[in-house]
Structures are given as C-alpha cells and as structure tokens.
Length: 265
Image (cartoon, rainbow, N blue to C red):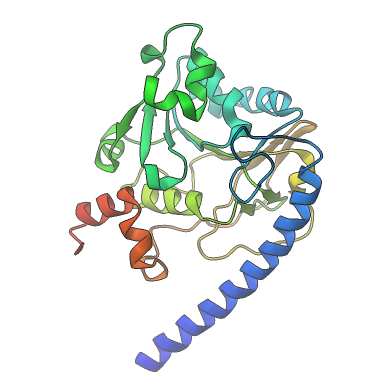
C-alpha cells in the first residue's frame, strides 16, 4: 500500500510539473499579446504576474455576461478582485446584488459588499479594491458558509481555453477559493462560473487541466460569449498535501477552514 501511494504521489507530481510547464508557456505567450490591449494598473502597470488587468472592450464583455439568465436571477455571488471585473462589480451594486470578494490575494481574507451599504453614486469606488475598506466588511469563512450558496461566480484570467481551462497569474488563488467553497457546500459542479477576458486571452489549443484547475462554463469577451461544450468535472476540496505550512500560516481563510474541520493548527 505504501509503495502504491508513493507511486501515485510521484505520478501526480510528474503530471503537475508537465501542466505547470505548458501553462507557463501559454501564459507568457498570451501576456505578450495582452500588453497591446491592457489598461495599465496604477500600482503594477503591466506586470501581469501581479495583476489581471482591465482591457479595451471589457464593458462589452460585461454587457454580454449581465444579459445571461444566471445573472438576472441571481442576487449573491463570488467575484474575484481582477481589474477587468470592476465594471461588473459596479453594475452588481447598481442592480441590488451582493458579492463576496477577496482582498489583494487570498492572504487578505474576504470582504462582503452589499448594495445598501454603498451610497448612491459611489458604486464605482466601491467596485475598486480601494473601496473595500470603506464600504465592505471583513467576513470570516464560517460567516460565508452561514449565508448559503453563491448563485454564480465570475473571474478574470491570464488565459482561458475553449474547453474551459482557466489560468490565473500563477498563484492559484481562485483554485484555493473554489476548494474552500466546495468544502463548505456553497458551490459545486452546478454553480455557473464565467470568465471575463479579452479575445487575445482565449486559447484555441486543447489544454489539459491539473487536478486543482477550475473549469468555467462560459467566456465573455468583447466580441461575443463563448460557451464551453462538454465541460469536465471540477475538483472538490483542498489538497492539503500540496500546500506548504508557510502558505497555510499566511492565509487566514485556510486557517479558518482547518479550525472548522477540527484539524490541528
């Protein structure tokens, strides 16, 4: 049994290394194209390893997403803090929808933004990370669990393939968030997950996800909405064996989840 488990772990590591290498190549290729359409971030400029930027035409992509039934019918969602989703977050507040968002990286924990806490005319400021502390409130993982299921999730990406494989900046934040939320039972394979990206960020080549990569259902771009056909099964839970102790120590929500699960700190 020990030999079998060791072989499985080594095989997993080898497969993961291959995926990481392929992802790195695709990500850097896309970044070179993205530089021509991205809107520079005030702090990170065009450093795409630190920020998923806004881009020309993101408002058109947001128009398509907000026309979807899951958006119209939903009232509560998880939205990543990517710059390309500022307009979506603004519209959600104007449409009376609440959302949970992580601070810069998951290390800062989560914030809850509710429309009734945002004065009229301040929705755009509240949609930026700078507005979180003014209009949002910090929310623990157990509080998120108590609020119940997310109606949908929306994320930016460095790149996304037509078969729904999404790559972020390389830190794995969204994968961790998804893993925690599945453990809490507030998202699952039926939860609509959309990516908002520029057309240059869409990869037509066949890509193979790692065991922790999240697959999206649809891809909103300035030129149209692409729907993922035959999406695979999404991962569940946190792969604790893949996390370094330092990473857990630096991530309050992971510590919260361990306490909720009765795991040793």
